[in-house]
Image (cartoon, rainbow, N blue to C red):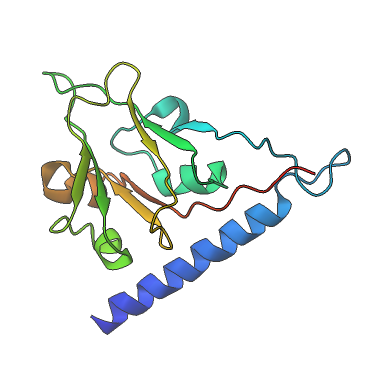
Length: 164
């Protein structure tokens, strides 16, 4: 148990460092100082053109898409279950330990197997009681999609910087 917890802390530190470096470098170019941000919330399609599907590294996607701000919208697009597609869903996990272990015991289902069709399921990153990250996972197949298909990622939204 202690070793897994230590691994989680190291992973969290690594993510924090990557996000910090990414934030430090985002928006700096020869024409703007120090931010090149719109004050309007943004919409992100989770996974980009690959959408929400088995085998995509969503942690990598979230780090490349960062930073995320409060009131930004995450759009989860996935095909409804059929004879040719596996079912997917979206759940929130309550803490880092559940996230690292893909432990779905306390997961909260936020989008069922059919809600990702069409324009997708939209989740707004709200500010209320959010001093901790959002931990998103696919809860299908008893956590198999989370564990093996790496269908999980964490988002720690920030306050949106005000333009100068």
